Image (cartoon, rainbow, N blue to C red; front, side, top):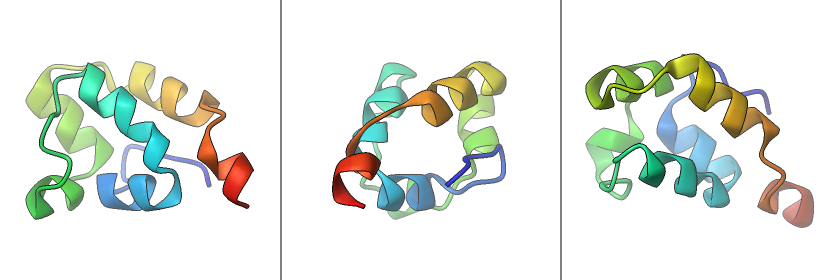
Length: 70
């Protein structure tokens, strides 16, 4: 899965829950909230003042559970 600015946070976490650490690092501590899971990566970055391109690089470079579970 390639994560883009239009990817919903919920989709990214459903794909690989270990990505949650990057959202937590940016101050998004409400990942279980239905509203946050329906936000796009871009929307979350705007709200939390995070550079979207930097976050996308981290998310797409992450080598976590996706490789263990698939």
